[in-house]
Image 1 (spheres, one colour):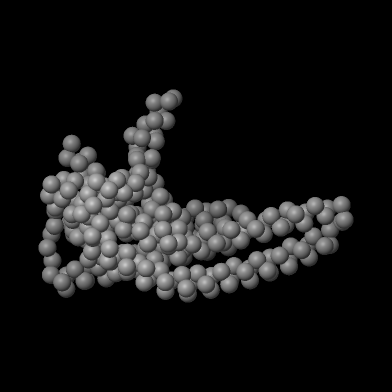
Image 2 (image 1 turned 135 degrees about the horizontal axis):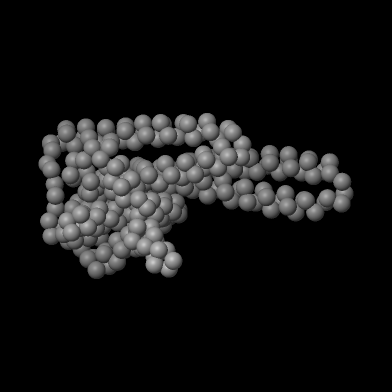
Length: 272
């Protein structure tokens, strides 16, 4: 039994995938020359973060406050109409409201971190590409690169973003509709949305290494699915790291680097 659990967690890569951001941190410590490749992306992230957090997060918290006020009023009206001996429910209502508020704030932070990643990775792509190349050269001794002209690179980048939007729409819209069914629908929608977000995050952080090989969007998606559960735990940890305000300014470049480590390890395993 113990060997089976160890195989599931270790051999199948569940825990291994989650360790790559920390492996990337160790790599930066051992190779400080790589730090210069993340300076400009961090500056880009700061600019994008100021715009997102001052706008989206500000209005988001306003909505959270409005939802909390409406929910408090509605629940208090329900408690008021109950018999006096059920007065203890007032404390339960207060606790429930606090939990709902915290959950909404967590979702808001995840959404803001996700958007920061989309813009940050896109705008910092040239520098992240150089970082990924240097990392792969350090790890494998060589860099696989299929050259294209500027127009070709730009076309692929635009097409890649459009295909991500199509994937989000094809999966996200049905999940949104399922959410209207209370109970099971809400659970399915929540799990599905988290899976979709993790998949997109995983694609973004693996892309610097995969794009040099000029793989199609379907091939990149296939690598994510074939690498499960390691890619799943990798994506979840990265999603958590990019959702922490201020810290995500640094963790986004760290996750990009960890994506290169992830792919390089899989390439080594394939060669063996």
